Each structure stands twice: as C-alpha cells, then as structure tokens.
Image (cartoon, rainbow, N blue to C red):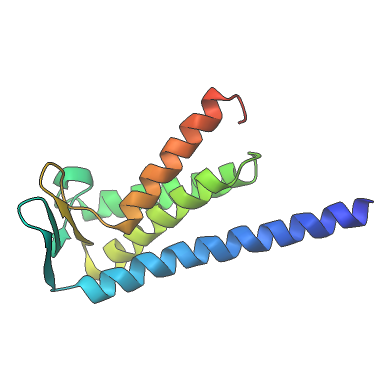
Length: 147
C-alpha cells in the first residue's frame, strides 16, 4: 500500500514538473514570436504589440534592474520552499513559472517583454497572467483553509 502511494506521489510530482516547464516554455516562445510585432485584434480595445518594460507592474521601479532581479531571485527561492510545504501545489507552480519567466527576461534582455495590451490595463505577458492565476488560486486555498 505504501509503495502504491509513493508511486502515485512520484507521478504527481512529474506532472507538476512538466506543467511548470511547459508554462515557462509557453511564456518564452510566445514572447519570442511577439518581439517587434504588432497585431490589432479588436480596434481600440485589444492589441498585441511588443513593448519593453524596464520596471515591474505598470512600469513601477523602472531603471532598478538589480533590485528587480534580486527580488525575483528571492521570491523564486521562497516559492520553492513553499512548494514543499503546501498541499495544493498548483498555485505555487503558476507563481513560480510567472516569476521565472519574467526573471529570464530581466537577466537576458534587461527588461521584460510585454505584448498584451488592453486599453484600460498596462501591457503584460503570459508570465504576468500565470502570477495572477497563481495568486488567485492561493487566495482561494487560504480562504478554504487548505494551506
């Protein structure tokens, strides 16, 4: 019985790992194809246009690359520790993928590649979406007392 539970846990861990890698790959490949492109999906509402974001959300802390990279590394380490402490790992997987996706950009390019533009929001990318999804799922787990 214990062997079966251990095998199930290993398969579950492989699934999360593969899902995590898939999210990062999806973020990076879409950013690659969107770099220096412009598409109008719905005129005056939704655009796909490449923008360089030298700051955090809404361009906050623009020009403070060292701080943003350091914060990204610290958050990544903290999330890895959290990953092994909580029951539902999916929210942390989303948060990790989003954080690492944008951290990769900051380390390689010095800015984050954003491309989704909705008229009432700042530009963002898939990594940002992953962080929002992870944050919402984590809040739900907290309210359900499943953390």
